[in-house]
Structures are given as structure tokens and as C-alpha cells.
Length: 130
Image 1 (tube, helix red, strand yellow):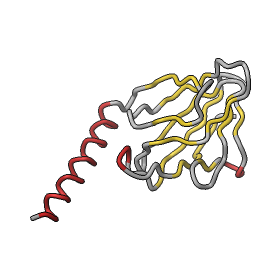
Image 2 (cartoon, rainbow, N blue to C red):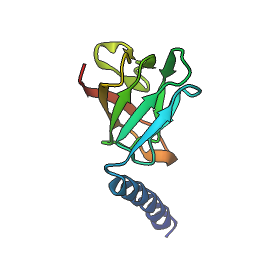
Image 3 (tube, rainbow, N blue to C red):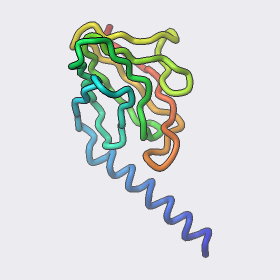
Image 4 (cartoon, one colour):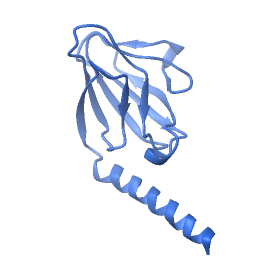
């Protein structure tokens, strides 16, 4: 009975995560990366605009709360860099991605993530328009 209760609890958590993603499928948000390096993706937003109001160069080093199969479209702004790291974010060419204007979009997909309750997963670049 304890095993069944534990399984049901885990299943409920996964169902909540799936419902969150399904209900926010076309949701977008803007994140000011002036003071942060980690962007949380758990709310299910599939388009995140990374603005940089600091005037200086800013790095994004990690996306948290990813769920396997989740896609993330990012709109970059000037002086915003997505940092390549095989443990967290894998960019094409094993190189950082530097934003130069607001018309640059890049798409990642999460592998190995289990949402807010577990692994953040690794984000793989699957496309860009520049």
C-alpha cells in the first residue's frame, strides 16, 4: 500500500506539471536578465523575451524546472549571452550565443527534466533564425 501511495503521489505531481504546460501553451513572458543568470521555465511559457536593462553584458547560464520534451523559444536582446555548458545548455557549435538585436530567436528543447520537483534537465538548441 505504501508503494501505491508513493506512486500515486508522483503521478499526481507529473499530472499537475503536464496540466500547467497544457494550459499555458501559448503563454509568453519577459524576463529582465540585468540581475539574474538563471531563468525559471516552470510556468510553461513557450516564448521568453530576455531583456537586458543593465546596459552591460549579461549571461544566462541555466534554465530551471524543465520537463522532458518542453520547447522554449527565446527572443534575445543586445548584450544578452546564452552560455554553452554541456551540463545545462548545449548550443550549436558548442559556443555561447550572443544577442545583438531584438529580432533574434533561438529554440531549445529539454531532455531529462522532471519539472520543479526534480532535475532541471539539459536544454538542447534545435533552431535559430540568425
